[in-house]
Image (cartoon, rainbow, N blue to C red; front, top):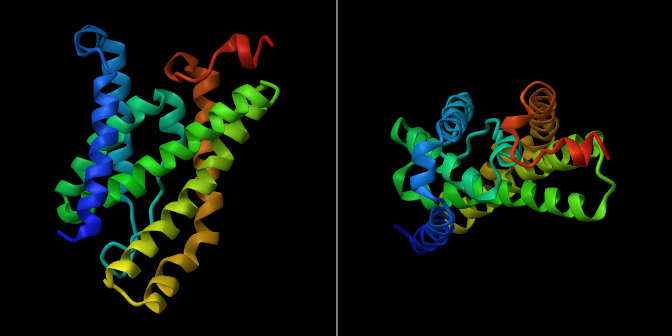
Length: 213
């Protein structure tokens, strides 16, 4: 493993450890609904990530689905659920095991962090309304997340010397404009359906804040 891979793995491990330390596993073992939501979202994420396209190894494009995951589970549980999905995807060839720290940090923690930051800022500084929640907390963070994830992974492969910048730009970075709107639409539509039909599944959504306000 390279220095960057080890560094990314250590940081990603710190996020995982921090998330796991906050979980009451005894309560989790008794809470069947929470188990179903976390493992169900992890399974859905795993299936979503299977639909990817790319010519060069590592320079694959696919939907992330992490904005809706973060809003459903909160920051810590989203880290855990995405880790489960990442392990499963890596086991069947989603990426090399040497890059699991990089994929975890840039491919999951970064988008989750962006979404949760948007959620926190909007909750405290913007009037709480349903459309604000959908667009500011799901739609826009999803678009920004996939753009930054693509840029950061492209930069990683360039710094590592895996590919030349021309290959990265022509086969990866150049696709960002084609990815941002579908990713935003997917997450926006998913969270809209969830808050309408299954609001109890969405950890960050409360009727008294966004509907009764």
